[in-house]
Amino acid sequence: MVPPADLKGFGPEARPVGSVRVRGQVTNTGDSMLVEGQAQGEFAMTCARCLRPMRAPVTAEFQERFRRQGARPVDRAADRRPETGPELGDPPVSLDDDQDDARSYHGDWLNLDEAVREALLLHMPMKPVCAPDCRGLCPQCGTNLNEAACGCEPETVDPRLAVLREWGKPPPEAD
Image (cartoon, rainbow, N blue to C red; front, side, top):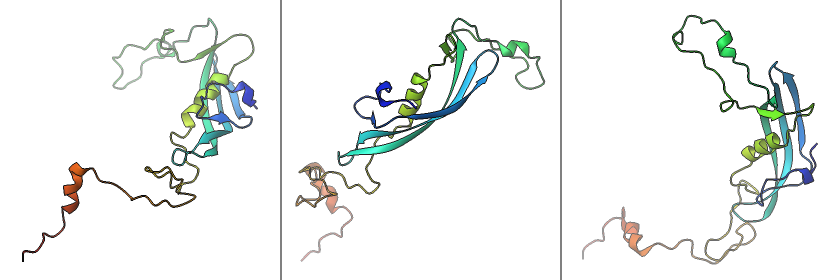
């Protein structure tokens, strides 16, 4: 469990309501630690249609590789013998520090804060809605259409496009 006070970097659009539950496993791959897990939490957001406060559950799967600080990645491609196939003539790929996608750690602890935060951010809804049938706000007067109807005209047409309203209608009959 990660308490809400420790969860930072979500911005004003989403605030954790309670603790985020993180579950997973760590596998020692020899040259790194592979962390696979899931983070679940509830976040306070604003509905993109009606601007009312709401809460949304967010679940995110994540997978991160951690390498001890200062350790160099093992070049597994150089250790393999070539087999038959179209890549036979290709030179082996070697890893350098710029290509290594592993996070670093030191000591006996892996800090998952950034990995969990990134996974949750990637799984946040881009336009959260309080309900699938949310009607939103009237674009003219701002009335919440979920609560009341307004007396506004449904839509005004740009005068430059008004002629298109007549398109497809039968021509007026001549007298």
